[in-house]
Image 1 (cartoon, protein in one colour):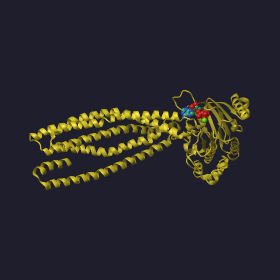
Image 2 (image 1 turned 120 degrees about the horizontal axis):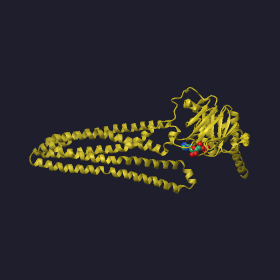
Image 3 (image 1 turned 90 degrees about the vertical axis):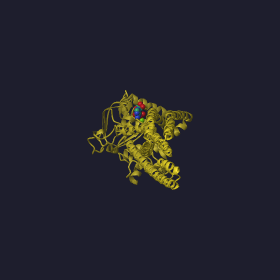
Image 4 (image 1 turned 30 degrees about the vertical axis):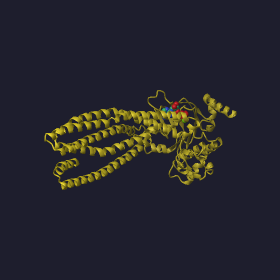
Length: 547
Ligand SMILES: Nc1ncnc2c1ncn2[C@@H]1O[C@H](COP(=O)(O)OP(=O)(O)O)[C@@H](O)[C@H]1O
Ligand SMILES: [Mg+2]
């Protein structure tokens, strides 16, 4: 409407010197501008609200989805990539929705409106635009087709940068103690530089859009003024109409340009969307949908492995565990001994079904673990992982992590069994002492004891300790073992250890070598029957003697 009013002012008002007409038309223009402003603010607000709410919902959904991932699913993505997908990628989608909601309403509206108005003024002159549009559409299409794979690459490089940052921040202490600072800076420089280059590579294409559109706009304006000027001189067109017409042309091309910018944003967001989708569509390979004994709970804590073989990925050639068979009776203490990397952790992870066996069966209380409701199974099996973490919060909160309903007496009992109570008094505020992220204000051995107490609070039928007392001194460890015998009579205890001392009084010890059981029995039986066990025993004795 605005250019039309301008042309009326020129044709009618100025030509005849009618001031009143000019003022009325001018006031109409102000009114239209105010309506436009209100519409713009309202539209912008609604679009933003829709976009940020959508992003928040999507983040929550993807996050909830991540919580369902099995260990194997998590192995498929790096932490950095997960963080990028949840933050940057979702923000990209949010931006395109915000822009898109505003522009996809405004641009086509403006395009069609301006086209109608221009054709109404002079349809023959409007044909000029018909020549320009295909040219513009084709060039934008070519630009976008080139840009898309480059955006994809850019996000991958961003993943790399985030992974590097992530690893560095979590392992800052290790890096400092190993004097790896320069190496890490170099590594970061490399991924940072690659991100810069891939961004530049994508942007090189993007920056073409504006100039291409501008030149199209300028050439069209010249063509219109040329052809229209001839119409005016031959008396077929009013001068005011020509002014309005050129303004409409600019509006038409501007809205085309806006549309192409949206397509560009879309192609950028499509790369992000694909990555978000990968998380949503990642098949959770470990579920209990087909479990036939969902009502079962772990009651007595018997464990049996029947010809179990295991590998982490189907594509691996060699098994990590081969043909493992053994039984554990309820309440027994079982030690597992073997070199690092022989498969101890892999073996025990099969019991709470953190991974599924490749072949064979793992039975708990005589029932295949795949037939349990996963929640019931894991309620009955507590596992203290090899590199366990504590969360920021008080010591008590961390302990209650195992069981939110735990009473103070239960916490006290678990703390005593795990020998946490013996150092609690030395903390400034006892159980209410605030632990920093990862429990850095506790010693390694104290942290391990807290992790054990946390697992005990679950009241498990089966307790698995994966090298969980490695940093605890021998005297304290002996106390823990003693209280396991007296306080946890009915709980099956599986203890992986480096030191034979830690498992010497176990009811049964499994010796693992290269994914196979090479010895099984009590300490004295193994000393007779298993050369591997004797080797480990004597090598540790030597060390103790020389120490
Ligand atoms: N998440 C994993 N994905 C692939 N391979 C793994 C994974 N975890 C461990 N492995 C491999 O499995 C083997 C056994 O590891 P693990 O069970 O941790 O040994 P242990 O606990 O006896 O030191 C090692 O060769 C290790 O490289
Ligand atoms: Mg291990």
